[in-house]
Image (cartoon, rainbow, N blue to C red; front, side, top):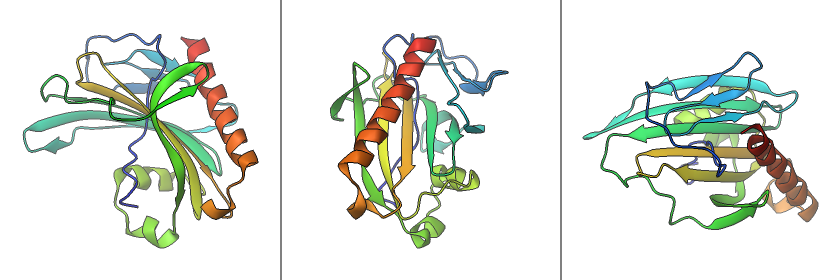
Amino acid sequence: MKVMTMTAAAALICCIASAAFAGHAYIEFDAQENMVLSGPFNAIIPKPEGARIGGPEHSTPSFLAEDLKVSKAGYFADDQFVMVQVETTNAAKGTLTNKTLPVYEMAGEEFRARTGCIDISQQELDADDDPLFEFIELQMVQIVPAVKVVQLFVTSDDGTGEGKILYMRNVPGGCGALTPEFEAEFNAAFERFIESIRNAN
């Protein structure tokens, strides 16, 4: 799974306004278990019906002279989930960018995104120490033998903040069994989720 550098997602709706970075906890849940984003993005992400919440988790990793502040949380079901991640960096302005990613149209909006199907074995999961997958495994979501994935990206105007939304759904027969009907339902479900964010903001 080293091929999947998928650190989850956040706040990808055009109406989300930038704000001054405050504190470090960029994601919290309100009393109704909706996600409340702050920091580089201000937004509410409504809880999908019947979902379990995971997180939020906050961390401050460092890489050489770069210090990051990262918050992540998610909504989970037995065979699918959506995760949100917000991070900021103390590196130079413009460090974080999504301009090299393809543009997709979803819910009437254009987004920078990655999408695809990925085969995953339990052995790969057990050997991978990626913090994202360790977090997902704690939520007891079935992702073996494959997942259909879409990951959307947004960056702050100054390029020091990034939000990601990562949506995965289990493909029971593996990527070779992926059907047009599965993909159409997957895309429709994710578009409904994006539309719910727009309506909440």
